[in-house]
Image (tube, rainbow, N blue to C red; front, side, top):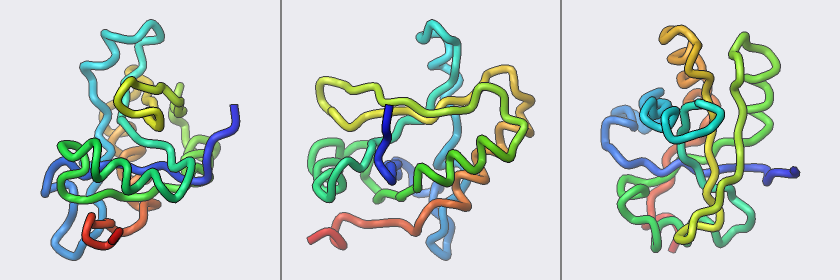
Length: 139
């Protein structure tokens, strides 16, 4: 499957952004609850694939509870780079459309990784992410 150049992560909590508007690793924290809901047992961090320039506005208007404090953009090539250069187990991404969000996908984490290793991956994703995009900036 071919994926878009970028994905978007909604900023649900203020603490996911630092005082100088950088992305905190908390923004990419894997949800351990999801491993029990998946056949493969992987943990998810929800994203929206940026298939077109309209996706950001779609997210702000239709998934407001997730994008309440803005959005961050992450290039797919950076996820690939992390995967290639890290000992990260079954670290990957997917598209998993939902009825309310055709752009939905996940960054997937191996639940067998040591917590410190997983936090390093989350920090790497945050480091490669762009600055926060606010809804007012899309008008």
